Amino acid sequence: MTKSVKVSAPGKIILSGEHAVVYGYPAILAAVNRRLAVEVEESRSGLKIVSRESPNLARYALKKIEEVTRRKIGDEFRIKVVSQIPVGCGMGSSAALAVSFTGATFKFVNHPWSKKGINEIAYELEKKQHLTPSGCDNTISTYGGFLWFRKETEELKVFSHLPLKALPKIFLIDSGKPKETTGEMVAMVRQLYSTHPRKIERIFRKIEKTTKKMLGLLLLTKRHPKLDQLFKENEKLLEELKIVSPQTQALIRKIEKIGGGAKISGAGGIKEGSGIILAYHQNPEVLLNFAQKEKLPCFEIKLGEEGVRVEKETL
Ligand code: MEV
Image: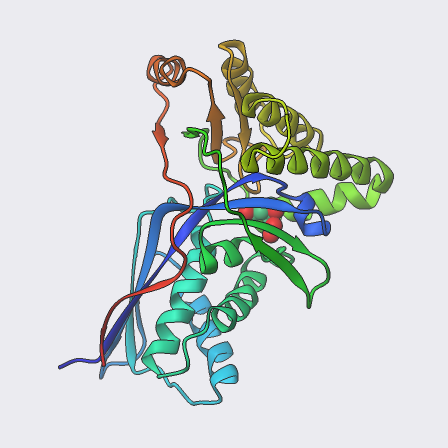
């Protein structure tokens, strides 16, 4: 029988704290029930990648995994990627690929399965793709559930699982695929930070306050504004970071006008779309009717999905 392993990992949304998280401020993330699976299979004809993703990344990943496992893995296998996560829309498809690929290769070469080990390599792969990521995307994809995440230094990232009590009905609305990559958006904020450090620090501190209010709301520990208000507050700050396109801003204003709140989730985008946005309305019907009228793709998503897992192995 041909030796093969299939490992999958979830996509994510960021409830609060994107971009600020790159600079050491906290973020709250949730894994979602859209997964990406990587299947690694023995092959005589060498490394074959059946995927939209770049073969160079897979080669780089193999090199990193060889360093960690101290084994020559070679390239005598095929890699197949199947994904339910839209690419480049802020839902963590590249992190899910990095996590699943690493997990599948660990299993394939019989390296001890450890989430910590998988997460560390996935972070290296994310850096190769996005240059200076915080590591929050690969961490939520590895561990799943809901996470409070903070990057203290390059070497120390702390995170804690959140036992959520309140799970509001959040809808995802597609504002259009960003023209920019995550790496480009992170670089734009870095540029803004270097020209106006005090102003941008002030925005990050306000984002941190919103993130803490969000935590209070989700854990039901304190009285805080409703989720629509928190999304509004957070979105306003993200717009001050100049990462939301005019067309997405216009769409979010319309959602506010019908009594809801919405924010981008992830890196954003400024030329055209800004990826998926999170939308909340105390009366979901109003939001659904609005999306239908505007002909916008809108779907409810299950939060708190399991992290990386083995789907199948024939060894
Ligand atoms: C991307 O999903 C989230 C950002 O904060 C970048 C990062 O944390 O690496 C924009």
